[in-house]
Amino acid sequence: RPLLDDGLLLIGDAAGLAYTQSGEGIRPAVESALIAADVILHAPDASAVSLQPYGEKIAARFGNRAGEQAPGWDLPDWLKQSLASSLMRSGWFTRKVVTEKWFLHQDMPALGQAI
Image 1 (cartoon, one colour):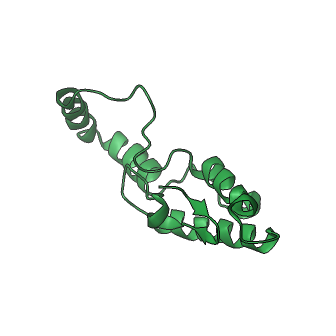
Image 2 (cartoon, rainbow, N blue to C red):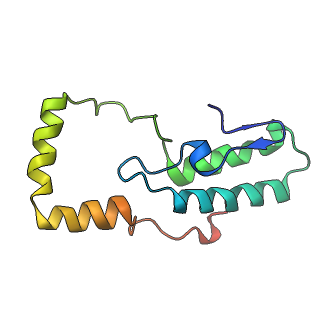
């Protein structure tokens, strides 16, 4: 579904911005709302053309939205299950990757001046 149209900006879960690894969506919802507010504030009108910077800023901040999988990662289910089973037994992987990277997104800088 498109992120924007005349007089319309989708944010958060409605925009498909929840993180695919964890399903967490509070941070993307808040950040997309801040980006939307900034775009609306600076737009000369509510046309889709004037609101287009929102789509560009969302893509720059979040990359692919939910459901837009990066090409080349379509692995067979048996392989995914085997890899996941092995990785989830690792304390380092569950702490550093699952918790810190996929859930907390500690590697992602604060929104700050990105808007």
